[in-house]
Length: 147
Image (tube, rainbow, N blue to C red; front, top):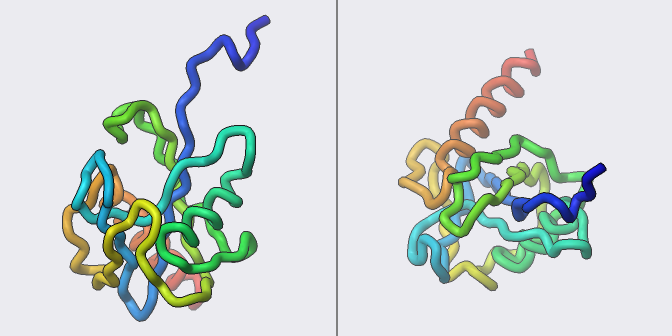
């Protein structure tokens, strides 16, 4: 019988979608890969120290200064393609922050923040444009269920 240590395991990240008045919060990357490119905020899980939900809360605050409660996180999708990140196999967990508080300010790995119209999102780093597409689909479905 094999143990988990017998396998080479991917890293895990939490990525966020913050929306305000039809605009999505983007961060400009401060470091490689994709230094200077826009993407959704997020970051790596601290292995053996936190849950993905805690990662989501911590990274949201570190990169944007926004506070999110665990109950206000909605898991939109999981991206597990082995080629989605040039640093190696990284499984990304994309959360929607349904509510948040604080004043946004760039920090940690983000050099700038930008609220961008949901329908005018530029080419983003990693596979984040796919996440935006999934978010739009989620919004449409959510809106249709209300009626």
